[in-house]
Amino acid sequence: MNYDRAIKTVRALRGMSQQDLAHRMQVDEAFVSRLGKSGNPPSGRTLERVASALDVPMYLLILLASEQHELGSMSTQQAEALGKQLLSLLLATEAPAARKSKRRSVR
Image (cartoon, rainbow, N blue to C red):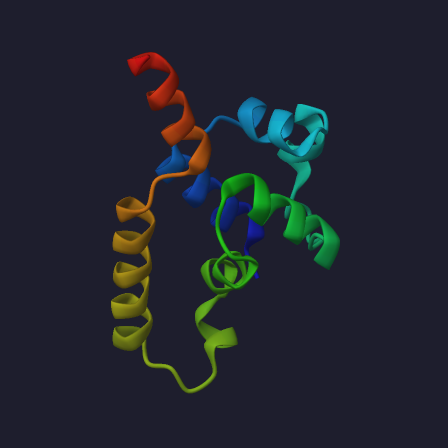
């Protein structure tokens, strides 16, 4: 599992920096920087907090973190198709914080 890649992918799609994620999780930036690195997977509770701060379901982070060999009988083509569908879903849904920010700037 590559949680570092999954978190970076969603952060990038959300336009969120490490500092933004750290602020939303109420942790320091160094903690966010270490997430999923050095072979230490985050705990279930930490994944829940990350997913909540990124406004995505936890299962999506787990799926995005999966390596090809961890996907069982799913072919590379199926994994790529699923990845494209997930990407379009993430791009189509806006994080609540971004919606609130837009509403405030309109008022």
